[in-house]
Amino acid sequence: MIVVQKEAWMCWAAVLEAWLKVTKGMRGEWDQETLAQNSDYLKDLSSAGAPTHSSDPNLFLKLLNDPILNIRMQISQSNTAQTVDYYYRLIRDRSYLFVVYTLPGGRACHANLVYGADTDYDFLNVMNPSPGAGLQTRRPTELTGPLVVGYREYSMLP
Image (cartoon, rainbow, N blue to C red; front, side):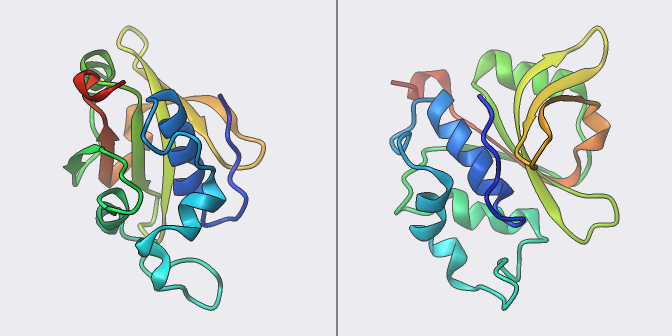
């Protein structure tokens, strides 16, 4: 499944839309526009349309814990990039991953859906919501910290 972000700052909403659909979330029918409109996270908008705090992945925790969205996502945080084994174990033991990571230079964050991890060749299969990106492979070191990884325990899936 590929979901393309509608605005430059809505990568999180596009990835969350895809994640909710593949994990059969309570809000699985919500698209990125609905997620953005219903989130308390977006009350602080800059004149550019992006949340003024969108460069801090730790602040995505407010979004992911927003009671209105009822996402039921568990969170793992790290200040550094993780290994392919880390992602492999989370996907194997839990579910697809919602990942917000810091872009090089630390001035902004980006979100990807991680749906596979190849431990033999050290790469991740991701859905990148940027226009024209789609399904890609990435090295785990490209998902730099600080980062937030969201997942749902299989026991929480319907």
